[in-house]
Image (cartoon, rainbow over all chains, first blue to last red; front, side, top):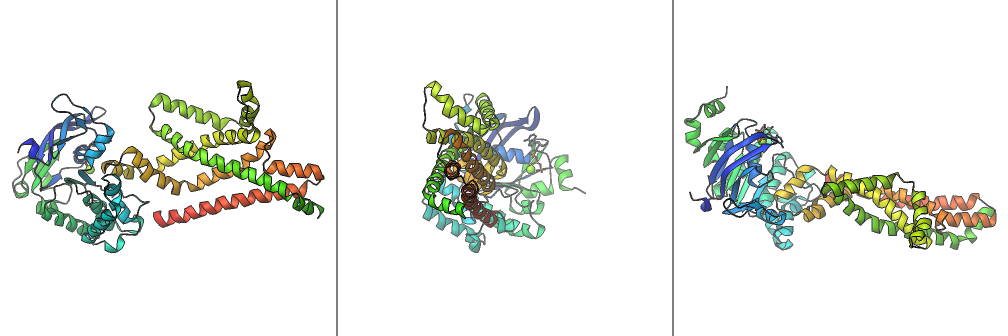
Length: 255
Length: 218
Ligand SMILES: Nc1ncnc2c1ncn2[C@@H]1O[C@H](COP(=O)(O)OP(=O)(O)OP(=O)(O)O)[C@@H](O)[C@H]1O
Ligand SMILES: [Mg+2]
């Protein structure tokens, strides 16, 4: 796939924290409309990688392009320089993120959370954004919760609000960092079924998850990370039935 | 009995004093809240030499007894060519002093906002000024209301010291009435009553914000 056709294109991405190497020389291209699940043992760098994609974490080397546009550093080739804050902020509007611990804004209602960035960052008319926000909330089964504050919601409902907040940006890509691992077991299903629905609609998503059967079911591509590197990129059936590396085999067939 | 009568007959003096206290405190808050917020932004965001300098200045101001600051402004500044009449000198010293405390209060309150919802704001493309205006300050107004309310009450109390530089505020008025009528108790009790009234109003505001906080944060 040509670099410019990819929804996300990563080249030579490295990250260290004060000399401690966490990501090493990562290259990855993800096609638009596909769902990618990132798997790997704890500490392998999955969250750090995801956070580099929207520059919440600044890589120590390498580049990230979202829908053909560079993020974090502007210019091409070797002559790049750090983006101005304003430019970085506006680039981020095409990549939404869903966090493990929801990270909703507690002082805003559910609908306020969903319309905040569309209205104040994208400059959409408030009326229109609210209408669309309510429609999105209806889709994730939260019609009645639009006007309450997040603290009154269950974990599963909070995460569905967080997903609605992401959808309201009409982003090119949505990043999920373990969207269900802070949830009580009985609430995992409701969040997964929303994500499953989005995958079916052809959104471009990158999901870090430990839910193996879910990954197998919805992913177009599995990315397996270990020790800060991508060890395997494969279709789910290939990855789960015939992993190429020992590490992946050990990871899948954990006792 | 006689004392109460004195107070009643000097009510215009008391009202004048109370009006001066109120105008000083309100004027002070109108200035020191926005400046304090800006100061807190500098204390949080500025690059190191500037931030350090600011932090030292704030700490220094908070160590100075308020009365001394009022003296410096009223009796000291004229030597440098700036002569203010008592009310303005009072407003200036009260504002400088309160701003130093508020800057520190706001700085601490900014830090107490959950980092994950600031990070989410960055991820959704909010600019820094939007993050302050839309995410941090609204939360600070709710969560820091009790500390800010305390500071307002302290400012009301400090304003009484301004009688020393001849500002005709409430304590000055009570002193004036008591000295002129040789009845110390009733005039001062009346002043205490009026100060209490002002504190109650502030506390009612704080309780209201507390209810808002309960509604939003549980
Ligand atoms: N801010 C940081 N400072 C220093 N080290 C960090 C920081 N963030 C992550 N690390 C380290 O980087 C490594 C990768 O962390 P990361 O959170 O990306 O792993 P992960 O694959 O998401 O793990 P998990 O499955 O437990 O969430 C770990 O060794 C972690 O300790
Ligand atoms: Mg992680």
